[in-house]
Length: 121
Image (cartoon, rainbow, N blue to C red; front, side, top):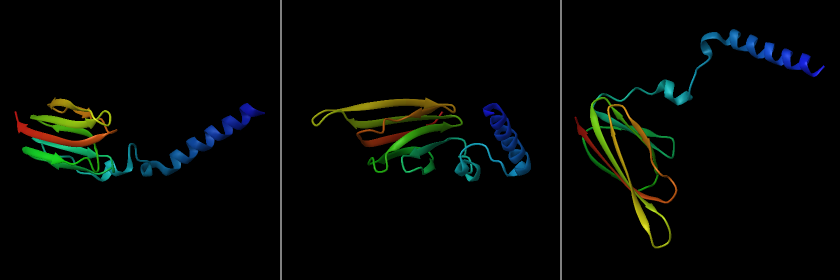
């Protein structure tokens, strides 16, 4: 009896997906509405699920909201330095060097501040 119920559920799911047709969106819902960043910029993702495109220059962030991920867009060099609290008295600096469409994740736990430097390559 159990295999029959599984088949029924699977068939119902397929039928529902076919009925929805073009309404089915793949990926995160906000990604479909976002415009891509122009070449020569960096897309910076924050812990509060926001993101923005930044052109050439140096940008400092105080860790609220924390940086989560940074992507280079096109031919651009992106350097990310993040200060992370290791213990009550010790900190460390994490370093990312990204270029040509690479993305890198940033340590969120204990993040105090971050600096992102973007230079065209």
